[in-house]
Length: 371
Image (tube, rainbow, N blue to C red; front, side, top):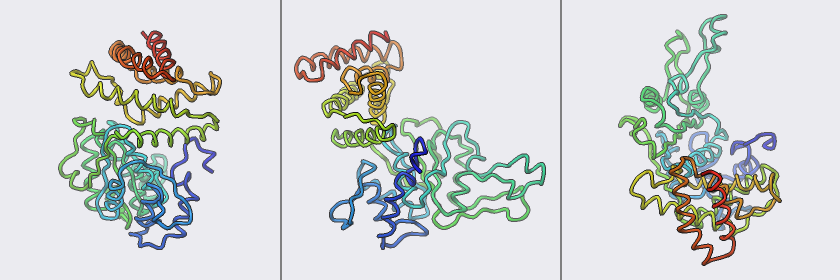
């Protein structure tokens, strides 16, 4: 079934694995959860020998074990879970995996934007049915959050701080009272949340000042802060995991040379270091230089190599993808990348050799083309 989708949700992609975990799970489960907290942790972080399972469960989210455990414990309570962190730290992916493991449905999602309204988290109406038969439960269109309440499952709210204060205030009522009133109806006019309902929200820590959360809303969430991955080994595992998924999805047979992955990781580490020491925004790339953006650079290079190259990933192609992906402002970003190429990549290519000289040349060509 997952082969028929461009991107299958986690509960579809890992359906067989979830079925197996459920079949061997004899641990206590909160509410109507499909898996116990222990099995959910194993599903997200992968199995260890000490878990005593008859098969290996691969790791799907790469981060500190305590973050996952605290997230699961929060969802077993009556509080919402807010995953907050920089772009590219895997907040949405963790939210999807948790929802898939808990209730086998990660698709009840509201995307927070400046245009998100109360209707998006409560309900709206099928206008043609209202005209024909009047307002009733049948002519009502429940939001993903209301559906989650009725079914006793997890609802998700992406980019909470991008939504307006009116929307956030409506969410306070849902998290506090655990019901939604429908004043347009005389009968059957309250939707009560069933046991197991909770909300996983995400927020970008760089969005402070967009629509700050009120104190009242903060009190109804447990915060789990997801830090930027700084450990090179962990970041390499994340990039490799996501890249292998990409190759399988596109049915591409192409090796990812470890030396090129090292170059990519080192380049991002260098650029992050330069951004940290910059004294003004003009000296920083507009890019957040996140792990997600590394994956995007690598994806671009792999697809280019497959469709327009010789199906071999080369340093020159990787350099061109990196420059093309990170040079968003002209001339500021191009000047920063040019300085990096001359001041760091060029000396490193002379000292270390290997793939660095080709990477140097590819970056120079890409910068010259964009300048």
